[in-house]
Length: 438
Image (cartoon, rainbow, N blue to C red; front, side, top):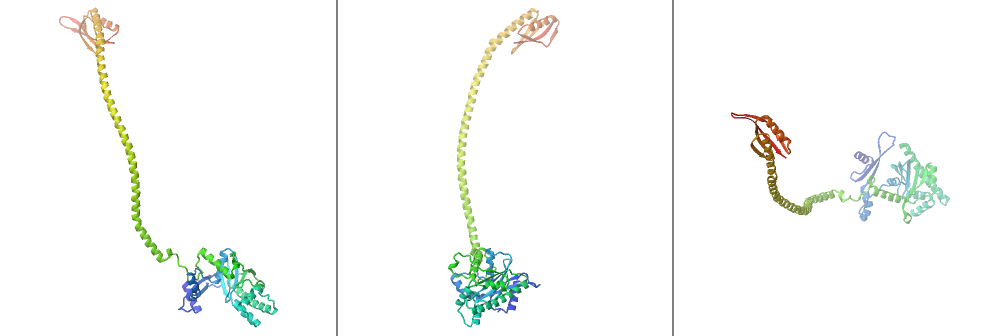
């Protein structure tokens, strides 16, 4: 799009192809034509360099250079004017004058005016026949406006203002018709400040509401001779510092970007990053080794403490094992002594008690066998039991014998069988009588 517009601008304006121009554009919204329309701004870069070279030589840089019609954006961005509606700004300078329209807080259209301060002075001199110095004329204009004391001069000034505002009225009507807008407010300003009586021409000739151009925001503004355009430049500069918006910046001496955003700065950054990464690995190894050394020292200290406790426990365990072994040996020795003594006592008890009881039992059994007319064949002892082999001549004798033994305390009889033993000489009944001595 920019290439097509540039080519069209060179063709329409007959620009010199050998010169360098800064060309920007804004699309016009609301035009009645079916074709797209653009506001194009062309600035000779050589002219910019010539005009600002001396300033740049002292300051080094010019951060922002703006075209005058765009300065009014700061009034909306700073909240000094509301963004609703359509406003018209007219400003007169010594060698320049312009009309600019803003719709909803954004630049819409602008027109060059021929009625600058020098033109007004020349026109006034033409009518009166006397040329005034610029400072004298400007002082008269800012003090009296169209209300001059001399009736003839007043009539001449009114005639000049009538011509100027009829001329402005034609421009405003043309803009309203072409772009289907309705301008509501007029802000009129100049390098000489407010011109007394100008509001009458705005309201009577243009039929619009006059708004005083008074946007001074500096506390010490009265200490300096500042024009209304100077105030707009201060506001624009503050807005640029806050937002860094380069859309309408026409400075040929811009401050270079921070070194980190330049190609050389990025290269140095990559080199520094490479060096840093190259040094990072040895540093990492050193740091990691130092960290491991600290951990190792800590673990060795913990190990020494735990090992000391372990050795202490091992010493206690060995001592306890020795005590257990000694106790077992003492127990075995004492147990052997007690076992030997028990065996001795058992032998003594057996000899003194069991043998005596068995002897008594044998004596008693012998008497009962004899009383039953029986014979004792053999006697066997096993612990507390006595087994006596007895035979009788008949079973009645054997039965009575067994009965007598069982009824005699403290004997118990265990007899499994009574056998009839027959041989050639005699017949007897034979039985093994087992007696338990209690």
